[in-house]
Structure formats: structure tokens, C-alpha cells
Image (cartoon, rainbow, N blue to C red; front, side, top):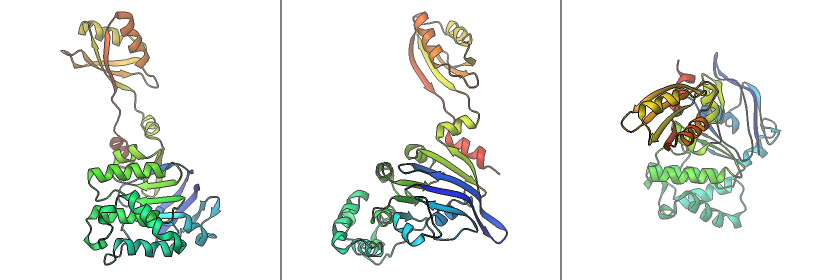
Amino acid sequence: MNIKVNNLTKKYGIQAAVDDVSFEVKTGEIVGFLGPNGAGKTTTMKILTNFIAPTRGEVFIGDKPMVEEAEELKRHIGYLPENNPLYEDMPIIDYLEFVAELQHIPSQEIPERIKDIIRKVGLNDEKHKKIGELSKGYKQRVGLAQALIHDPEILILDEPTTGLDPNQIVEIRKLIRELGKEKTVILSTHILPEVEAIADRILIINKGKIVANGTAENLRSQAGETETLLVRIEDGDANEIFTALQGLDSVALVDFANRQNNRFEVKSKAQRSSKRDIFKLCVERGWVLTEMTPNEQKLEDIFRQLTIN
């Protein structure tokens, strides 16, 4: 199911937590939702799940208006809020059975559904424990399990890898990527490399407004980044190579990265790529090109440019 948001606004008094926000997420798409603390991420997610109502604007789930069809549409949504909704005195299996009943899963299907979801989120070794006995990382897995138990078509995940160790993070990322092949997924996170590893597209919100919408590559382009390459060329004189690189029509600037190893930093002209020209040059001169690595602007830097006060 797709999600469409039109002119969404949420005010608390005179302050707009979300300010005229519009975007769309299509079925089978994973969208990373970024923003500094207080930017409006969690408020937007709560509106999408009908946890709170907007001041103005509309949310459509599968082309149906959330306000008018809330009871039906909420059944298609799995939500992991920032504060995990767990009853710590309950055993894991009992809690998931309780959630399954709330989601109106037929009673005869519940045991198999619980078994499957426990396997998916990696809770097999802990499944007979009470939730309060679990580490923070395993509690987060229980939260993911409750969001997935009814096999929703839409997943809204607020900081899904909080508290997980590096191995667990890799496993949950893999699970989210797999789920994203057939579900609509929105996830927020403060781990920016995680967004690049998982998301098909990135939304950045700042002070209640969407300030960026696109792939990581699109955002780099919009930020005005020009292509920078780290190049190593063997079997040639360093000064001769430097002069030849500087003479390429697509190259704006060349600098030595390491003169002894014939490594150069090559900056292309705006809206140009010099990769093919460098490769062709090496073929013509009989030089061996052993490295040509893009030196991309980090997503963290772009994020700061867009959200710094």
C-alpha cells in the first residue's frame, strides 16, 4: 500500500511541530526519515499511524483517507514507536499472543505466526524469558515482532536499531531490506550510514519542514558536490602524469595525494565526470590504472548543511 501526505500541519499552540509537509511513499519502497531532535519526525509518524490527529492536511493510505477510514487502515500498519510498547512482566510468547489477538488474527493461526515472527527477528534463544529479563537490544526485537505480528502492508519504524549491538544491527537491516521488497517502509534513525545501507530514498525534515527528498546520490548532487576521484597510476613519471591529468577537458583541478605512490586527487568540472577520460588517457600512454575511487561527500555533511541553525 502506498502512503500519500498532503500539506500536513500539526500545531501545539502557536508552534508548528509539522509545517505544511507533503510527500509520497510507494509500495515496495524503503524511505529513511531523518532530522535533528525536535524536527517533527516522531510527530509525523504518529499522525501517519492515527496516533494523533493533524491540525491540517490529509494522509491517504492506499488512496483511502486516514481520518475517515482509520479503523480499517490501522490494521494494515505495523508501528514501532520511539518508546517501545512492552509489558515487561509478561513472557515474550504471552505478549505476542496478546498483540496478535488485538490485531484480530484468527486464534488457530496465532501459534504459527508467533513461531515465524520469533524466528524472523532472532528471538529463538530468548523466547521463554520475561520481557523484563531481556537486554535493551532484545527488547527492541520484541518491539519489532509486535509491529510485524499481523503481517502489515506498511511498516513505520522509529529508531528500529536503537540498543542493538553491531551484529544485531546487521541482522535487523537485512530483515528490513527483505521486508521492503513487498511492504511500504518508513524508518527514522540517527545513524546516517544506516540510511544509505537500507533506504531507497531519504527525506530530511528540519523545523517541521521537508528540506530534502531524494536518493543519497540526488542529495549530493543537490548540495552542489562535484566529482572528486582518488587515482593511482603506475609505470609513469609522477610529474608527467600530473600534467596529463590536468590537461584533460573534464578535469578542473589535480593535486598530489601521495607523490611517491603516484596517487592523485582529481576534481572534475561541475556537472562533469572525468572517469572515462582518465581511463582513456592511461590506455593511450600505456600506464596502469590501479585505483580510481570516488571521494564522496559524506551524508553527515549534507545533513548538517540542511539542518544547521
